[in-house]
Amino acid sequence: MISRRHVVGGMIGSIIVLAPGLVSAHSLEDVQQDLFDTEKYFEIKREPAPDFALQDADGKSVRLQDLRGKVVVLHFIYAGCPDVCPLHADRIGEIQSMANETPMKDRVQFVTVTTDPERDVPEVLKGYGPVHGLNPTTNWVFLTSGPDKPEDTTRNLAEKFGHSFTVTEEGYQVHSVVTHVIDQDGQWVANFHGLGFEPTNMVVFINGLTNANVPHHESLWSRIRSWL
Amino acid sequence: MDVDLNDGKRRPLLPSVFKKSEQVDAAVRRKRKTAVALAGLVLVMVGLSFAAVPLYRLFCQVTGYGGTTQVAEAAPNQSERRVTVRFDANVTGMPWEFEAPKPVELALGETGLVAYRGRNPTNRPILGTATYNVVPLQAGAYFNKIECFCFTEQLLMPGEEKEFPVTFFVDPAIEDNPDLDGVTTITLSYTFFDKGPEALERYMESNGIAATTGKGDLDG
Image 1 (cartoon, chains in turn purple, cyan):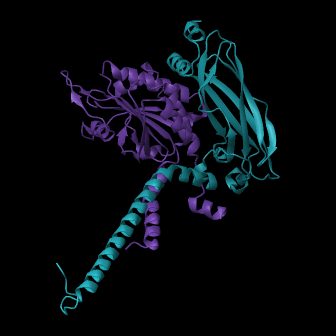
Image 2: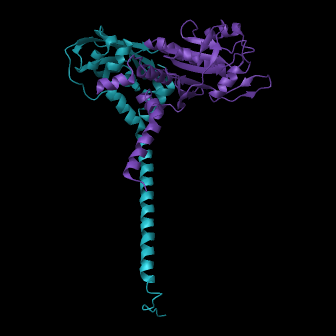
């Protein structure tokens, strides 16, 4: 027989089980509701982003965990892609330009990852960004797997972000168009699907994240103690 | 058929049947109680899952955890410490004239009301949306806006001028943060972006604004 004590225990247990959900809901706030209402290509995600250790055109190592403290806007393309990828890169370049007009500039990192490391050699990576309005001197980087890693490293990473690949007659690995947003704590918090979303909506979402997750030195416990 | 109640073998049958029946009833009642309790528990858990986000938001509002730039309903008690709040106005990729109000000095906890001014000097409607930032960054956790226009789509018709009010206060809890001991000035910065013609068309349609003042002027 279930006593009152059991019911109360069950409630406490369910609160504990729900706690991770409570924490992850914190950073999204009101801006999410606005995007739910107005942006049909916006999808909320709540899970740790798949980690990666890749390198840029100069061979410098870049890991996702090195980007903690910044909002990360991540997408996958390959330079040989004739149609959608250039438009996707143009769109990210447009968003980078808008964000960099504000104090968000220092709080967001744009990351492009090639899914064709064999063809996208460092010279290709270096030449790609400026053509599409992506500024490599500020907060954008084009990453590849590097010579020491298997050739399919970045495609495996893309699959962890939900992409699937089909091979064209020319031997290119084609994948879907999605822009991923990762918060300052490494949580994968949103996808913007396709190219139909309004660029300002992504800028607003980045702004919501940069304002919500302000760095602070106090621990949660010290906050609670001071409040009590 | 008659039942001989005087029969020694049969007589005890009736109390025995009654007893068994009572036992069955008691068992059924227990099962019902268990079912009701379990159903109640499920309802409570479902309710809690729906309440999770508002509960956590409440938690953040109460504790300020995570440095949430807060939207408050009322200002707390005032403090003797005063700060100057400066305002910054920017536009990106749009022709609006967007002016910031003059700086204000106020006590911690004191409510301030200012108004930005926006004007559309063109002959076409423009839909804008604003982002905001607080400098220094950490002060954002203590800068509470009771009313603001951030994140909301704003339409200015040709030649229209509009005020964008901001009601705010600086939480006296800022005094408890040693990192912000020397902060005497906080800057609130807004940047307006053009939402573009497609968003404008959608906005005007959904708000029942006449196309003659919208589409027809888009080339102007």
